[in-house]
Length: 496
Image (cartoon, rainbow, N blue to C red; front, side, top):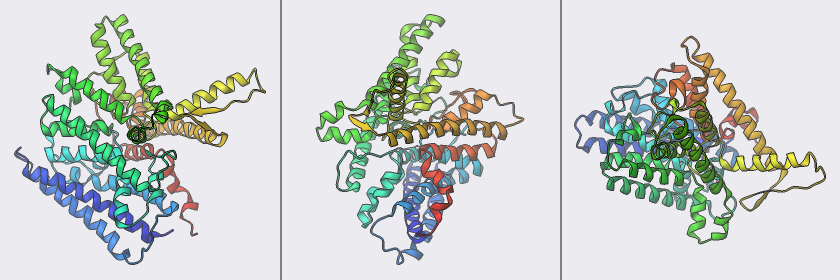
């Protein structure tokens, strides 16, 4: 294990994080809203601490690290520890600036931002300075594209090949692009991501939002993060005459954020045959549409709600949950039980592979559904041979086995984590629904859950050990389990 290389790359990552803190600090300093001078000072202090430690990790080893590439084992360690480090140091502004958080809360809020989860311990968001709220939204902007994917593009400019980093950052894995340099892919993804954020921002500004609110919501929409500068989330705009247009605009961009970003590269190349083979997007949109119809028609028929209102509320909520964004306009926790079961299923599913969304991904669901169908048919046609084809590509038995193992492990971790939350919160009167809701909301990067952490509540009332545990669960889910779990395998740390 080359610890010199690991220290240098992680140090560079912290310097990058410090640079973004400085930008938010400059905004806070020159913001027209009074009272942000403290936020500017604390952001700059946080940047100094983060950047200083980053430099201490770089300088002693700069002459000892001559690698032109990052080996696979070192890349795995960098990915796992990198997400933990940025989450820890990203909590400094919440720790240092009033109204202040304790270390457990600061880590939770930071991890929620970088993993684009959107869960929060801020009880009254408007009490926080705008500079801190901008940093909060910026963490989701960075986490959405995958801060390490951003890092891959930057590393190309200092002469380090970082293909292993790209493939171990779970959000972006694809072998069908045929690109000679993985840095080209990362750079193009960043341009597409930035372009979508800008388009969303301009649209929200045109609908009447201030530049600050438009920026925060654009940052957290494309990243499918869902942190809003308002305690009421998107419900803050319910009284606006064009609130329906804001919701529709956000639905479009939440959906875009849930699709495979590599598909946009294929579109730019005019490879429409590849686009037509894309099953993930069709399944995702189809599942969302079916769920919207079921919930809207059911609430309209059973509760007497107007069909227009029920469809509007169902459409925004379903897309927000399925995309793992977590914006809210209504309290879905008050909906019938069968509706909440559908929402829980959407939480588990998440978006498409290669998107900014969380969950176990639609592609794995497709493989599971097709494999299950084949196995059922085999019970009365045992000699028939089947092939599972997804997006025009055959899935071999080894790949199917890995997917089945991942789904099983994902569900087992959800069950085990629910038990841990129940243990940590013993004596508080927390319900099983709330325990399960906290785990689903964090491991799938949703934001709100059910019960005590529902859409009108937050995670502030949980105990500090629970918050630290859930912060770790967020990172575990964001890295799709293995890149973090592998850090606890002794063989990883043995010498070559």
